[in-house]
Each structure stands twice: as C-alpha cells, then as structure tokens.
Image (tube, rainbow, N blue to C red):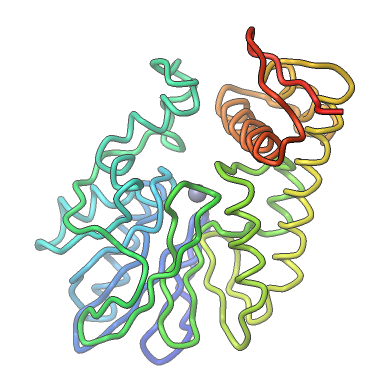
Length: 297
Ligand SMILES: [Zn+2]
C-alpha cells in the first residue's frame, strides 16, 4: 500500500494509505486518530511520530473495523504507554476482534475466509469511552461528532475546521467497486451524510481517499448509492417474498456486486438486511414465519 504524510495545517496531518490515520500535534505530544490496517501501518505511524519528534499521548479509534484499528496492538507493544479511546459499542469489537467475523457470519463461528487481516485484527484494550460532545485533550478542544450508520456508534473527530470523518462516506471509486457498501443502519447513515453535506467551510479528512475541501459531490454519490440499495431491495421483495440470503443474491446481482468470497457476502448481507430493516420500520415490508420478507401492498 502506498503511504503519504499530508500536512493539512501547521499541526495537523493526514496519513494516507489504504485506511487513513489522523495526527494532531500539541507541545511535543500527539493525538492519533485511528491506527490503520496492520503492523505495517503501525510501524509507519511510529516512524511519523519519531520524524516529528513527538510522543503519542492518546489514540482515538473511530469505529471497530479491523482496517481502522489493526495497527493499534503494534503501537501498544512498541511505544510508551498512551491512552486509547473508542465509543463503547465499537470498543467491544476493538477489544474482542473475533466479533467482526462472527457478525459477518450471522453470529456463528466464522470460516477461515473471515479470519484474514481485513476482518480479524489483533485486539487492543480500550481505556476510555469516546463520547459525543466536546473533548479536551493535550490542551486542544476537540468535538466528537456522531457518524453512526456505517457502524453502530462510529464517531468523527473535529478540530477547528478539520473533520476526521472516518467511513461516514467512501470515495466514488470505492462505491463503483463495491456498489453495496457496508451499512448497519440506513436511516442513521443517511442522516449522517445529510448532516455532513450541510457543513460549510470544513476540510474533510476521511478514512479512505484524499482530503476534501468540498465533499458535497462525494456525499451526494454516497446518498444515491444507499437510496438505490433501498429501492432495489424493495423492488426484489415486491417481485416475490424471499429470505435475506436470496435477497442478498438478487440485489447484488442487480447492482453489479459479484460477491466473490465470504467477506464480500457477509458485508453485503448486512447492508441488505439494513435496507430490509429500514423498509420494515416504514411499514413497506413485513417479516413472516419461515424468514420471508414480504412487501406491503
Ligand atoms: Zn469501516
């Protein structure tokens, strides 16, 4: 994976790689936001801190996906003690990473395809809950912003005009490659996207892709993809009552997601399930004995 340290302001950096990392410096100490996929990214974070001559004081983890906290265990082992913060529900996944494979395996023990580094990171103990609202660290005033939808309690970190926005939205190229993006709560994801789209004068430092001074087009594309997923799910249920597995296959076939392995299937099944829950809560589908979803006519 390529790696680039992008300086956003005098004391703020965006470490861009497969999954990005944020870095804020204050008086010889640093806050790091997310830890990247693996040990390699952990090593790069450590080297970046060394080159800036700063020590790590706190690691803020936005959500419990392996590609965003996989480097944390390396940092724990190889740096002097620092504090780790994460939203409580996300912290469960960060401290017990086998939960991600179980989630993608409908709660069952996962098959080996679900135990690669993208879905099974090394565990990292979380010291403090990361709650929405103002957080003062290292003399800096941060705003912890709710970004639920992509994961249950995902948060972003705002510092001045910069928002580390985690996976609230994905780059357009990623949406083209994965037309059924992982989502656990459609209404929350859409609310998050609309709220971010209304922010003025914010520089977005997202979890994937380059920094964006104007994210409206990308956010609009993310909204369109979720709305299309909801509409396609309703269209398939209207065509014939079906269970979640059949609907996942049908919806993904219609949207061009070929589901090549257990990871892609698990991710897509959760997103389709989230679309079904969205439709159920709006009384557009019902759930029947036997596991069938049926359209309300
Ligand atoms: Zn994620």
